[in-house]
Image 1 (cartoon, helix red, strand yellow):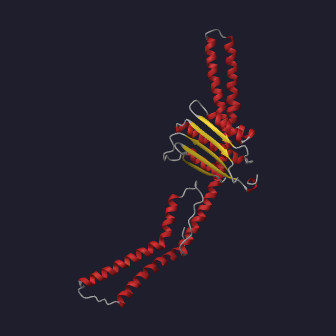
Image 2: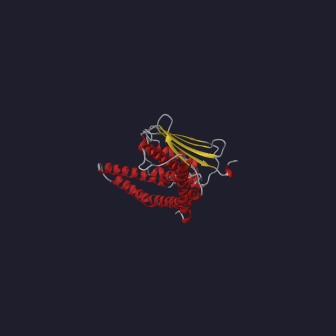
Length: 327
């Protein structure tokens, strides 16, 4: 909200611009060899019309120059996206306009901080819920299906043919369902990430997505620095979401997943590149926006762009703290 002092300042700025134009035109008429007859002659009307046109043009030019910062402010307000933070307006102009731009930049700082805090809470709650569901799938549904498998085996061992064969078919169906539940539980709660670390978790993830129609090739540097649990989880979830999108939507045959620690050793890069149909200007869905939310939590930069040649490339750059830059 612009306060009363700022409104008056902007008012007087516009008033003085108009007053300067009108005064200049009036002085020009006073000192110039101009006379106005009654009725007005054609030449006099043409001169007055020319003076009026000059006044209007000068007024328009001065107003456009003086209010240009407001145009930039309006454009930024219409296009700003808190998922792409850091964009700030350069403070220009005087008095009320400069104060308005400063206030807008301060508001963006506050909104980005509040969004980061709320996103951290939401994602933390999401991970806790994932863990709870995975635990229930493993402990409740998994154990129940295991008991069913054992009972079916007992029935199949004592049942005559062809009932025994049919029971064994049912047993195989239940076993496949149990395997799928275990895969879902692992994706919900990556136990391998907690137990063996990020490199092993990404290798396991690449293996899960390697199917008859999709090949995932992985390259993971051996000299990766130690990362915090939150950073490792973000890297894992971004890779998981990128591979999920590739498998579901891209029609790709080959995917490369790389995790590197390039020189000058100031960041970690996660890169997922496929040879599918590409993004083709498609709007970002909930999955990609979730990836951006996670990247913001650790101050990382997420880029999603067409891959060289064809396909899509997802690149996550994670800056390292000073204590990790000298590993």
